[in-house]
Length: 244
Ligand code: ZN
Image (tube, rainbow, N blue to C red; front, top):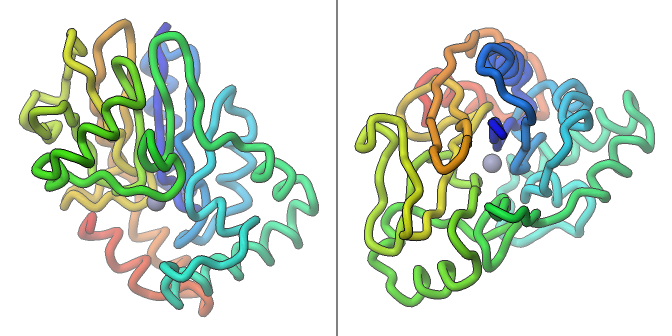
């Protein structure tokens, strides 16, 4: 089965629409979402409605902020965006939006792969960055929690981590074949890429092969929408044009 795996949409409808259009041309059977459907972006309702149609989605930390008490590590600007998003969802989608968010699992296991937002040991909140490859204890603890392949997002930086190395997509020609070594695959971000490339990022997983795709979209349109909403910090829009 060919699966598209997307993550970190962050209320960016222009990016999500461009990616789903791209996905439709790839002979993909199913689309999975690894969380952070909302937060930062100007179209939480429209994005959430699309993800509600997917066969599999997991809870991200921004999604969790809608239904949990505020965490200390949330910045003022993120908290303001969560509050605005909550109001939008309640006003326009009623209780269906919150019921859907509450129904999301924190991880999802299939025969051949595990799916989380953050990491296998803290599926909603833990970051796994490239430099963590030097943190032997962290890597060992994370890799003992899944069998062969785990897909995640959260950092908005795509790549393949094995117990030995971290590969950027460009370091494997955007294609990685999973062999006997377990792999933690970061699928990147649809709505707020942070690896210096402003194009939306997602992967297609088929048999044992993971292919990274980049899709251009009208980030300037999303930026203008964010600038027009006082509750959303301007920086959430500015960074879209730079992919950081
Ligand atoms: Zn995110």
